Length: 224
Image (tube, rainbow, N blue to C red; front, side, top):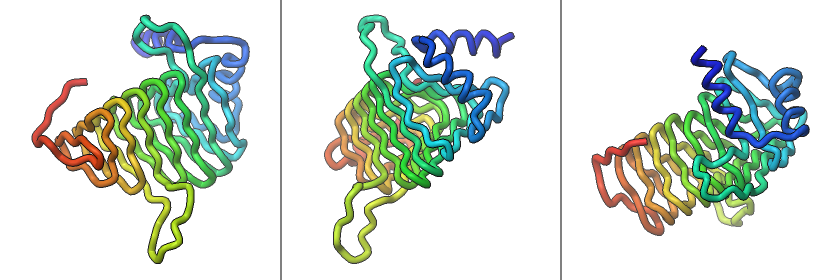
């Protein structure tokens, strides 16, 4: 019974129309390359979301995922368009319940993999994944955050790598307007101050801020 209540509550985070209902049926029950590991695993898309999903892209669901979710706040009822693009042989893996609010854009390029643990991303986020991005459990990611594991263009210099994986650990809080760039590892329990530019690893249970982001406090605890 608790699972049914959880699903019903989640369904209310989506604005439905005929197309979003068709997406719900197709992606959860008929699509060949969608794998539902758990009985309560669902792939939900808001009516204001644009989907560009290649037939050979893999969706692995072990929890509930919403693209274009309603914000919890009722102050602003305007819904912005969202976009989810999964290119050929890409993979998106949902390990627990993860909600991405309206106005966000996610692009997973060919042969790349993105993994969402549990938590949420607020409005107007932008994620570009060309190799691998991992986001852990119980993560809170604020508005206007950018996460990119690639420069998209090559720098003609010896040993230069334009693309490197990003890993964001469990119980990480990323503030408004932060930018997380390639090769970064943000360890468990870290807090990233609003507007920070993260280009180097951030240790466990620290607060980092600035451009580039540097540790400004250690032994940090925060509540979800």
